[in-house]
Length: 311
Image 1: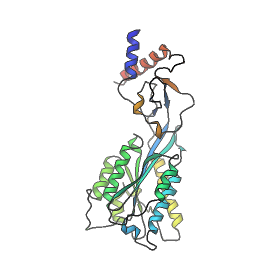
Image 2 (image 1 turned 45 degrees about the vertical axis):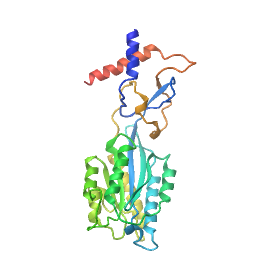
Image 3 (image 1 turned 90 degrees about the vertical axis):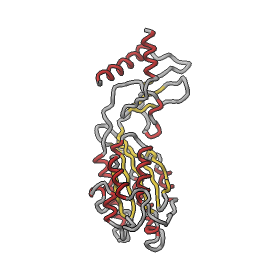
Image 4 (image 1 turned 180 degrees about the vertical axis):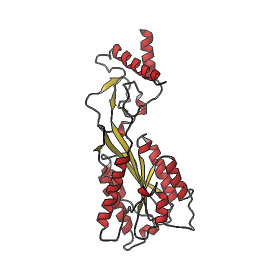
């Protein structure tokens, strides 16, 4: 029996494995319970790449008006990033972040959970001042890719960029990060879907089509307009993009049987509140009854059998 207990303890300290759909919330204080919760969430990571270069900021008077429209578009979009029923008893949940760029890239906010982080993200977007210089769209897209890879969920199929730009310049301009084609191809190779949203008027469709994953991710999406139908056009763009994401999002795999999982590989900060009835692993706090040895052994053997059956 002692050897079995030792084996269980070793398993609890074992290799860091965090099965999909499994959230382990805990305290880092030694000797406390490690509550284990399952979540049927379908996480989506969404990152905005906003062009505030000179060709945007100084195109129409009053100068900066198109940048204001871009910020308004982004904040209206963020307002719609609320948890919603997805399918198979799962909820679609969002992580969102943003940057803006000209000949430099400025991070507005890294990926943060929605809707709890909506107010802060919107405030930061609203406080953006346009840079008004060159246009390094390739560098901005690659920075957006980086933010998607280092933040948000580990569910790589549900990562999206929304690039809002006029597409300028067309030619004769040095692109220091490999060029627009290289940035777009990098996103495709990593499975990141890219929506291309125009800053109108006088946008360059040729460049916007290069940015988009394919024609479906470009269409006639617009974030700005000088037409009387501006409000309708912008609202239609936002709704269409969200509908596309919701309809194509990949749900997490089916939940696995209960297994001990080290706490330091799961991030509770990007998840919704736990289910009301948790399952606890780890040493019992004092005072309080110890965890029954029978329960520990049962959990360990179940996990070991699952591992062996998958080999």
